[in-house]
Length: 205
Image (cartoon, rainbow, N blue to C red; front, side, top):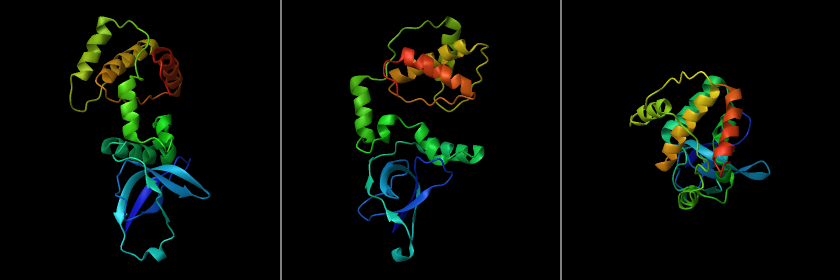
């Protein structure tokens, strides 16, 4: 019998255990549909284990459905979110679902349909042109030339210049049909980024 640990979009710092039916295969990082109290909720599998105890001794509910046939969270991202939750004492469920696109919070949409929809319709595209000077462009090229993980310190003084730097990287990443996760250290910068994103991108959740 397989027990999966699932995080739900709730403001608590704990996960929930569910029994996975024999007909299903656990996929860490994928979404599942599970019962919670009197309703069904979309959750994320963060780990699983094989339990040899009698099922009657466990007060766990069964997973209703595995939504995705492949992980939507990579192993690195999964571990990063778990570490962030523990280090900063953040609700793990809220953290996982905060970075999840709204459309994937819908149980009727699987990750393959989501990816196909984006790539075929080119929804995540920059709709307005913006000027980037040669200095910023040179820095962007230096960042993107590395194929392995590396960290960079942006020392630009003004927020506007930093945002143009972010937009330049995002534009090149989207052209490669890749994903990008932006972690902003100051809450005031988040609102500024949202403002510019809604102007620059014509499809923004």
